[in-house]
Length: 583
Image (cartoon, rainbow, N blue to C red):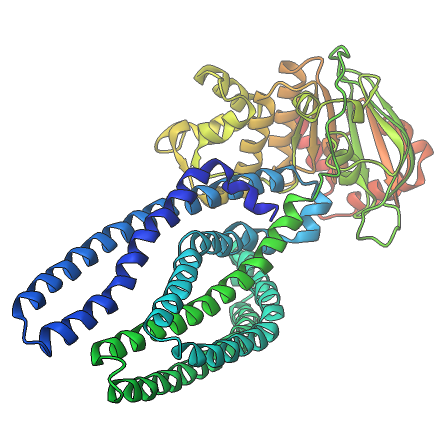
């Protein structure tokens, strides 16, 4: 019912549809009566003129009914399609507003299913309610009225047949309803496997895992088929049983009608009309049973849609602040644990003060909490304890849009979108001129490969940047962040695909052309960050050192271990760094 509020803007069309449907139903209900007149007075009474005139009237009524039916379908279509568009838009906006932990909870495949198949199911329900439900209810009640008008005794047949059909429908739908939720969950699994395989196609091919993934998809697909078959078997049982009851009822009507004709209390045409009306009544019940199936399926889908629409974002806007734009970041006794990590903290008691314009690197072993630390600055997550201050103000006080405009972030995984290279760069500033785009690319060391492309900056990038190398995608992502001219620029291990020479040029370019910008770099290689103002060292979620390269070598055992391990690598990081410095 909460989702049905979206029909309100289209209530005019939703009301016109059943009004137009009245014309179609009235035309259908008039046909048996007119046909009985043709049989009784025209055929049996040898009145050809009556047959002609009544036949023409029937044809005209059929045409008018068809026009009314078409109008009803058009009105219902406008209402249901507008309804589904508005629900889909709101659902998408809500998905975009969910925090990362909420998105992880629902899973990508499930959210895709809810935005597509579930909304389509609810849209079909709305269409049926506007047209089919009204049509079948009127046909049902109108048919009973016309039958009883012909002879009250026919009411006995209806009184026996209707409860039987209703009981069968209730029993079958009672077993079918829970299955629709299971079908939706199985469809989630199919979409999740599909999404993983499409995005990870290169890894699958590299490890020759096509057969394994095909089997995994086949398992999920078979589970979906089994759930669907359980529903279909129940529905397949209902249809023939209802038809049997309807045909037996018709036989009883013919039998009763035969006695009435023999007693000269009815005419043959009236018996034929009674059979047709009974068929319309019982057919209406069958159609209503199919509608209940649609409603049950839609109810399961509506519940899933409602779960997302009713999920209040964990990360919400603050009251707003007029804090002066500087670029300082302060972590004050910050502790954080992911909701799915059983309460085990990823960060524990972090206190770190980063001044405006300072270049600070963050290093540590895998899983030490480096990326998590960076994610707290633009409020992808909020700390469980402590606070993160931006320009001296708690990050929670900012409106999210204002906060994230102050922060530019280049993530570990470079996300690019279909469109030109310039389009992707302008995510950092939609109104940026061509000169500004090129200047940002030069700073990010992307101009040299973009200029060599067939169409230059107007070259179309394949979906997810499939036409670019890892280093090119990273540089394009960095260009996007540079163009946004943030106060705080975060590199979340986003130079890992760059060679040391290109990385050194990038850092020198940032230092020269983005003076005053606070740079926070999550790094793995010491060689690229040796000359940073400070290096913060994380170990199992704790800050164990924060100083210059030289001082950390003297005072921080964890840093010395990292440095020593990198010096033992083939070729030596020290030699690579020297080569980078010479460039």
